[in-house]
Length: 86
View (spheres, helix red, strand yellow):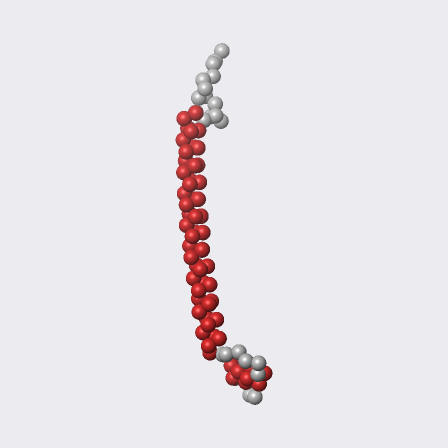
């Protein structure tokens, strides 16, 4: 009668290999979390920069085309911008 050793079953990894696999998986998860954190930080910086650019553009456009209650001015500006005959 042949006795089975604990290492004879290929489906079961030795305890030491299972511990190493856990450490490797944890290291990969840590690297992925660092990558996600870096991307979130970059996204936040880009969002702030976009808001700043939008504010500057709104100020620039308001200075170029002041808003009035006159409808003839708006139609003239629209015709001029679209190069349409008046």
